[in-house]
Image (cartoon, rainbow over the protein chains, first blue to last red):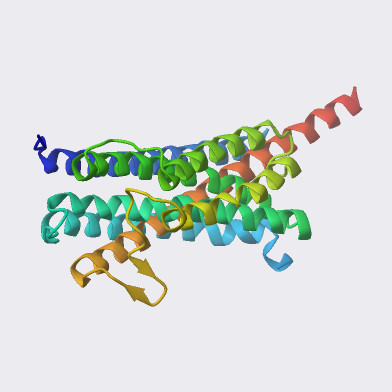
Length: 46
Length: 242
């Protein structure tokens, strides 16, 4: 017997994973870059 | 090629290019995903689950493109000793690994309703999983290097690991697989325009985000290296005076 699955559940989870994963990667990279550039600027002032 | 090797020149270009790539990539990706979710029709065989295509295919391509970029940059680093090539290779590893993981997860989520299983140990899925482990190995090797952005061992690993890319590509032709063979090749597509156009837009959008993340990672590595070098010089100067 073939079980019937709601395809939309799998679709929504895929899209949520794609959007959240990309947002985390972009946000983490951007904040990391800003923190590193601030460290470099502070080292220039010392 | 060494005309582009000057970090100051690179930073001048990267400062305005980074937000431009990220913003345009986010707009294009969001638009194509909204199209895929609400405007694309259901497919005759796969039904509604075909919408996962707009996440799965761009992330698969970029997972492979990320390692191809590592291999090319590693070759340039080893042969021409281009000072930014090693940094570019290291910066490509994170987005490549993230997209490879997304490809595996979205493929698993597509496989459950389409094939009736989350996972099979066939050539395509296994070689893609191997790619994810290669990314982890590369990142560990690059992190272990003391010289920021320059690691011969990581560069050689990046070149050797590229052997997995044609294996992934041809796996569906060489071995029996639940995974379908390629629907798109250069100048040829078996896909209807209703799916092909948003898929290409999603791929361009995700690629722009990939490029933007590579630039942010390169700027991070350069800024860390510059701060470290400056602090080291100051510490040496202080020791010299004492």
